Length: 146
Image (cartoon, rainbow, N blue to C red; front, side, top):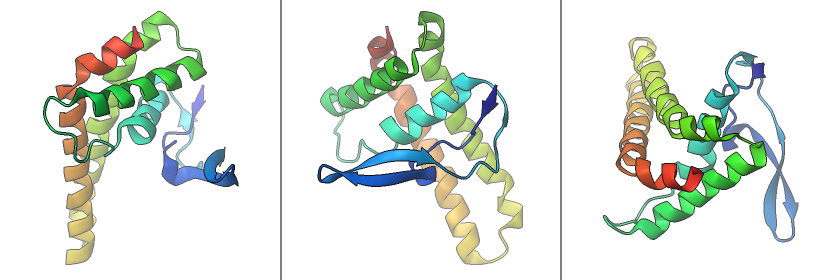
């Protein structure tokens, strides 16, 4: 299977529809390669359903996380995931967050100027915060996928 490997909102084309924006296409296939579809779906679940949407959600306020989990479930439903793949989706999501942090960490040595280094460190920190959030709420996401 050929996977996109970066199917996030930053690589989507949107069209105005009914007063909002609707994704209508995917661009930037420079990292497309053979892979596991669940890895792409884990990345999609992270970047479309979970990523930084918890700002302001206080500890114990599961309603925000519950909405995110419902979005992950909707993505899994739309993709037609079977029970086995659903059981692995949260792990795939966390794995992509870990891999993203590692990838950016490997770029630190090439970040010559202070601005590039700061942006790279910010991306590492973001990936690690996202992973910590997902792991802390793993059961909410897993329950939504059952």
